[in-house]
Image (cartoon, rainbow, N blue to C red; front, side, top):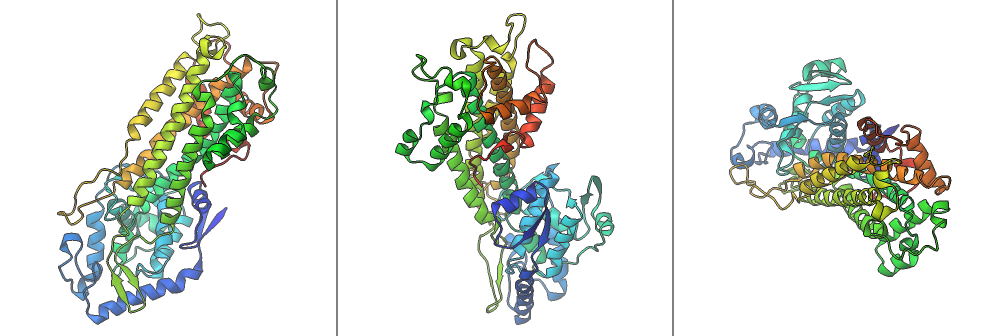
Length: 505
């Protein structure tokens, strides 16, 4: 599919599609605004005014005036000097999202760049050319300078790029797709490397992956209810209406829909058990709270993704160049911290359900879900693996937004730490996908013990998706391939896509 990039008017679903691999086509309706912004830069230069980053130095060097015949060289040196990142390269799909976000920001027409700059980014995306960008080096203000400089460097033919699966020099990559290296005009290097697009791209990726894992965890949580022969009473709408939180109400409705028509549930409807453990009974409250947090983060990121976040901004009326602080990524940092907390809690409760299912005293099922425990260890160690991943996520969930460190000779004396706050979400969602996959394996095994009774139609579908790939554990076998395959399926959305469930976006 192709997403039409409409600067300032994109939906989160649009960004999700780009992250999942959709092509990008820039709406030409913004061309006039872009041209007026570029013309305004020329008018400001002609007026003789000092304009930050256009005919002055940068940061602490803003008092240095630059001669008109050195302005192109100023922008080139800015890009080269700021391309100072380290670490593993960004995943290509997040680079693509970052490029699209930068196009959207520049397309608003207040960054002062020529149309040719944005069109070059579009051509790169359409040709599947992505710069090789180190993932570390930004503190989230004054913009994501180091990684965005690597993006700008590729446009001028410096550094390395990927074209499909091939890595080559930027100059060779541009030539391969029919582009010549750009000579940056006044303001253009600064507009490219200033902004929050690196942090926002990572935060959006974390949100989209967390949302998919959340939906999968709703399903595995419902499966665990049937595996443990838990009660439907905690999902009664009247309970949740009394509290009023929309996320909780939506989560409870999801559990009711997932469990509707289960023979397993109906078989013990008059049993003597009064209350289930919290990991079953309080799922609407915990998962609903996580959903509320994800929705709040999604609202913040939706605004940020459509924003203009470089500096200074150029307003053709006047014209004016106004210096401010839109590059400060504090909103993204808060959103990333919120997503991290939700990821942590979704996984934590999933692991508790797994621990409950393997304990015969709590679940009423065979020890460690093995038909022949003793000789077989069954699901003993998969629960340990889930516990290990949960603890990793707890450590990573420590808020990043409360940290700051002065940079640029104290000119940039408070920074957001949004970059690594958002970047850590990828490791956390990978852990969460594995935790939920382990519950999928565990709960399916528990449900197997209730045959020939069946669960609901939806949960039988969820069980069937897994059993089509992974057989019931009769005797111990090499477990790692089963876990790897189930985790891969969670990441591909195989489980989340079996029905329509509430989400953040």
